[in-house]
Image 1 (tube, rainbow, N blue to C red):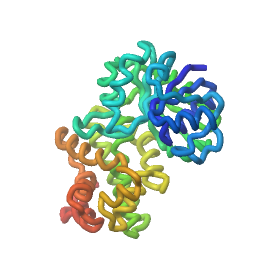
Image 2 (tube, rainbow, N blue to C red):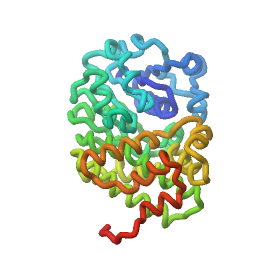
Image 3 (cartoon, rainbow, N blue to C red):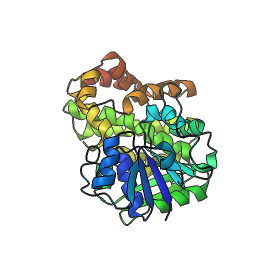
Image 4 (cartoon, rainbow, N blue to C red):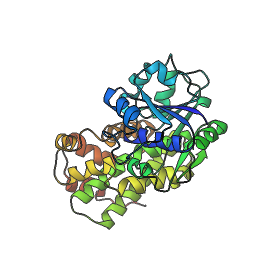
Length: 332
């Protein structure tokens, strides 16, 4: 049994905290919202962020005190909004134990720097590579919270650290696999959100399986190309963290990015879709960052570029597809 702290008590952070507790660990949830802290401690619930769970495990407690949250942590899990991660983590830098493994659940590319979340976390905490791990895969928080069978991938350049985290989140319903391809895992988790926006738009505009399959397939090709240019391994994109996560995110209304895109496809503006979704889906800022990163690495990403036209220039689904199709016949 390990002492584990989860920073961020949103839906995914709380669901993963339940997995950790089910695996036999002592779990402390940190949340800045006092009502969430009180709800977890007094009612064993997070009714505002994960109402599908009637009762959280007894091994989960919560606090709003940063120092107390991580004081004895052997593993610190970061489940903060990706674009706010750097600033939020700076407040924890002086409190995290020097031997703790820090695990990122975040999926995104930092908009202002075009950096992956592994880079952001390590820079914010001045963390050596061997103490960092990332978790990513087809992990819709509601389904994980309902303890439906599923798997994930734990990545660290230190395979021993990856195995430590994998053991900590291994249960009868949640199966972790390990890899040393941190870059690949991070790129998969970030870029599939861009594809999910486009697939959601296709569905919202009334299109069916052929359109969705084409967008998903071309999207996987794009994110693989960008990942390889960034130093990732090709096989990562064919596994759970790549193809698996893409299928789950592009095919479920539980996906915030799919739903955001669906609303765009119905004709809503980005501002209207944001209001409808109670916030911006992570794929929105990631789209611009992905296009900028692709340009810097000399990689062509027509789907991501077309999606950026939707976000920045108000393109409709038809306009996006016209740009994606083009007039030139090319090899697949």
